[in-house]
Image (cartoon, rainbow, N blue to C red):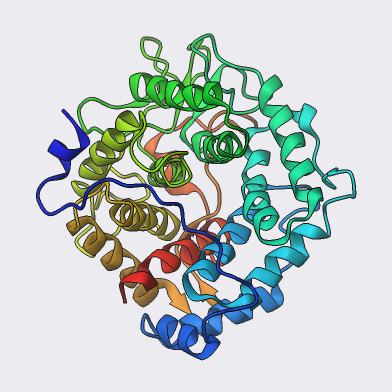
Length: 396
């Protein structure tokens, strides 16, 4: 069944035209951008400006959390033309990049797939500035991927410390970078690799009963959290689904070519994932921490997952892959998070972290996921808010 068949009526023809970065010298009026953001709530603009004024790097190392903030700011810049957001990212990233493209705090031999995520912003920064340092830094990140360990089925290990494992968030960290790099260099083999890795993930991580995807897969089946028959972890963690949905749309947009050009599998995958996610929305239009156990004791509507999924639904609609009704679901989720969890100084309702294995051991059980600490202003949630707003503001 094709993406056209699955999406339903009313969807525009699929045509991928990547959004070009807005000219820094000819921004849209800042006052109009502030007014548009305020349409979602009076607290939105004070939160945005206050958070960035107080911002410090999440870690001294090159890290995925800061990458979420950087991408969110660039997305908002593209949507609103606010040059303060572009300058924020340019200052923060430029400070880390040496003349030869070396990245301060980045160790490629760590083989941590998360560390590819901040490299995504190197592409728009290079496009906007022409600074060769950004182009050289891309090559350093690409070199890690060329040597990164893989499962026997061909997927990147999540990290060297998690051998033979694939986690959904790893698709988001690495695959959009691969697509953007292939667009720059014309590497057809890299694009084929992206499609192959998504295909494996659908085969090994998808729960046939719900159509949703569990958090992780151990190819060896050696971890205590992995099913001895399938290698899958036991539950659908909503933020993992958020990472996965964002990975798909962020690969679709920069894919080379004006039309599908072999992208039917990814487009079909997004439609399938969106339909499954729709079935597990909360009454408020958000997504539960453990997605398939809505309303169960200890479960809660989680902000970062809801914003990530909203972003994917909105963007998937804008790209013409999803039916227009999915944009309504995305807008509803963004507004619900703002109304319920956003104050002028804090975004709440964010699961601080969740993973599998390691010490102390994380067994992937329901009780584990609902026991992780709920925090405010974590960059995984704030970055997702900025990204979702950048898509939502285009519908205001």
